[in-house]
Structures are given as C-alpha cells and as structure tokens.
Amino acid sequence: MKKILKLFGLLLTLTMISSTTALASENNYRVSNLIGVEQSEFEQMIAEIQSIKTAHPEYTEEIILEIMDEQHQGRERGIADIWNALTDSEKKLCIRYPFDALKVNTAKNIATSQTEAKFGSNGLGDRSDAFRHGIWNAEMAVLIGKEKAEMFATAHEDKDVTGNESDGYPKVAHKDMDLHNNEVGRTIGEKNSGASEDEMADIIYQNIYSGETQFIWLHE
Image (cartoon, rainbow, N blue to C red; front, side, top):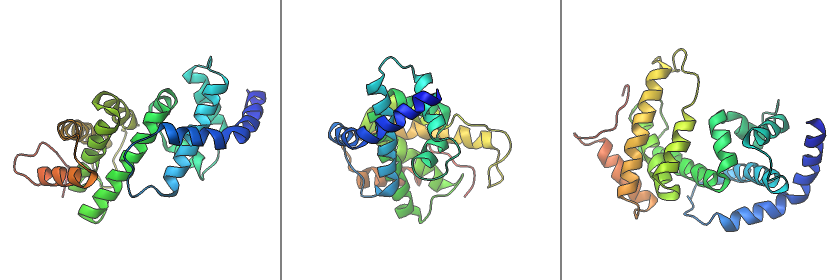
C-alpha cells in the first residue's frame, strides 16, 4: 500500500490541474456567493478522488477510501482537515458520487451563510439549527435530487451518539432532530425547485416561524 501511495503522490501532482479543470466544467450548477477557501480545498479533495478513480477504475470504494485515509492521516490542515471531518459514510458517497459531493458542499455553504444572515449565528439545537438543516437539504434536493440528498444528509448523521452535545442535550436527540428537519427541508426544496437561494431561505424562515411548522428544535 505504501508503494501505491507514493505512485499516487506523483500522479496527483501531475494531474491535479487538469482534474480540477474537468471538475469545474462538469460541475455546472448554481453557485453561492459564499464559496471561499474551503470550497476550493473541497474541490481539490474531490479531484484527488477522481484522479485515483481515473487511473484505477478497477479499485473498489474500500480501496480508494483506504488510500485517501492514509494520504491524509495525521494531518490537520487543508484537504486533510476536510477529509478527516467526514464520516466514513460521507467519504464513501464522495467516492461514489464526486460531482454530486461538490454540489452538496455548495448547498452546505448556502445553508451556513443564509443561517448567519437570518439569525446572526449558526446555533446548536435551536431554531437556527433547524433552519440550517432545512435549507441545506432543500438546496441539495434542488441540486442533486431528493433521493441523493437524503443519502448525503443521512450519511452526515452517521456518528457516535454517546453522551451529550455542548448544549447539554443528548447527541441522540440532536440526531433525531436533524434527521427529521432534513426530511422537512427536502420536501420544501422539491416543492420549490425554481426558487433562488434567497427565496428558498425566505420560504423556510417563514415556515419555521409559522404556527403550523413541521420543523422541530430542542430549545430556544
């Protein structure tokens, strides 16, 4: 495996520019105003995955996952920081659907920026948390379809739920809340697929403050 990693180190150096260009042309979708450094690094991470898949189409997801894990083991900055923050389920989906993963990350950036704009911060377990998950899933439903949006959103919640979160509430309660709000958001996104980012944010914001909202949160 170490010999393979050395070969891929050289391969990735030679192909990163062309791979990133190919990803940019393939990934033609609505772009958020908030992209920033993390989006660029995420694109580089996907380019690494795509380079491995192109060079060795016979490799399984498990082999590519092992290569990527070893490539970024023990590192804490840049691409490694993003890769290591993903759940194993998310990593496998990034390998299986690399171009969709880029759109998922764009939807995440939209959700983060719109939550900041509407609430002033991105909270945990509160109404802003419900809003963030709602608009993230709504935008994913628009960008990659409801079915794949559910796959990525559920993979994101594939974490250890032992103990409590920093707000004092059980992690399992947070997971249940997030999974529920994800589904509500995807339904809204599917019904309002022609809405702009700002329009979608307004729709979800108004919904979450209505008396008949299906969104849930643990505390104010």
